[in-house]
Amino acid sequence: MSERHLFYDELGNEIEFIVKAKFSLDDTDYVAMLPADDIESATYILRVDIDDNGDEVLVGIDDNELKDAEEAYEELLKEQLQ
Image (tube, rainbow, N blue to C red; front, side, top):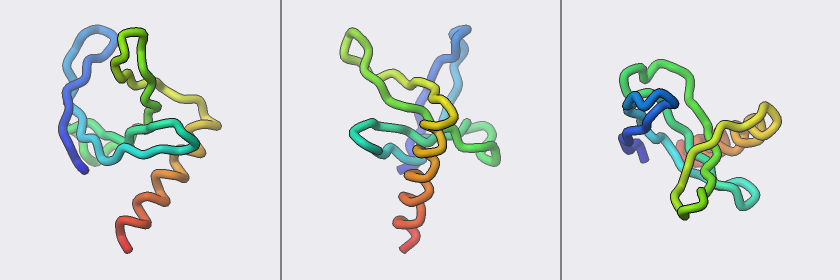
């Protein structure tokens, strides 16, 4: 996948991310991404929710949900290598 997207932090600053994958787990969508200016950093995994206007928004997740999402992402990576 590896698409570049601009996002805005809570202060309105632009940050470019590389979206490595979008995947689903139990009818919930997630994205795995990393900062474009620091591709050696850890991969962020965020949940995709829909706001009141019908737009996708990215939401941070708790440790339990993150663990499940990380496992699903790692499985996706393994499948891509085969």
